[in-house]
Length: 299
Ligand code: HEM
Image 1 (cartoon, rainbow, N blue to C red):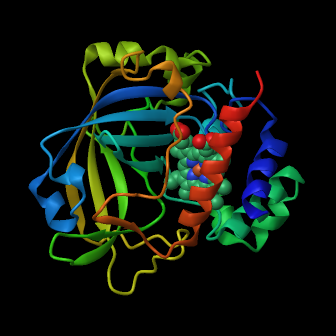
Image 2: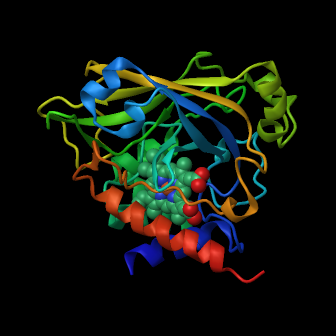
């Protein structure tokens, strides 16, 4: 019931739209490739960390389940970046991130309670004794110049295992090569409601959007089963590689049958395993059901 309740409550809040994601509804697919550093394979035996270059199909998105949500509003944040590594015919793995380090609940049940308080207009009351929800709701999120001028975070922890069997718990970050760049209020006022999408082809015409993939490695005492607990900033950071996004995906990268692509939180490749973070299993099942509902929706 939990998984369906999560989906259904998102739809209660944002509306019911066939073929549309109930969260991060509005997005754009982009294509490019990933090149690993030498350090990457020392941490994880995953195939894309031991291959010169792996093609990717990624999707930038706005928050909420509203399909025509404007770009120039804080309600559209945190933004999403989902990256699929196309490793081989039957092998792929995804990293799904958002542009905030904060998340409002540590378990599926807690997240459902947050969603329900939104739906019932009791969220301010709820936030009073739920600090993670309060921080997430009150965060002052700026709007970036384009999708590629902000960092993205995996929130959930994963377990890396290298070829010798050595393991480490990590959280992913995508760091923009351009540095973080946000719009001032007056710059934002001059932008049209769809500027993040309308301007993207022009951004690519000037050059690729590039992110460094970095992992924050957990210390011995850092919790891995509560994504609302942020690890201290002095933890080791290891650069795993470079993501180069070249263009808005066209028919070549995204044939019609793949337009309903469903990203998966469960890594599904050797060298990367879920941690004991309960949100991972919840998300995995919610995304599976949600994408099935999207695909099966009657036109
Ligand atoms: C219990 C917690 C969560 C629930 C219930 C939830 C729910 C959902 C749902 C229903 C979708 C649409 C899936 C589809 O139809 O393919 C979705 C997509 C998405 N979620 Fe979550 N989510 C959760 C946690 C998170 C977290 C922790 C992050 C960030 C790290 C995140 C980032 C995203 C992104 C970026 C997408 C869009 C993926 C795409 O572009 O296809 N979500 N979420």
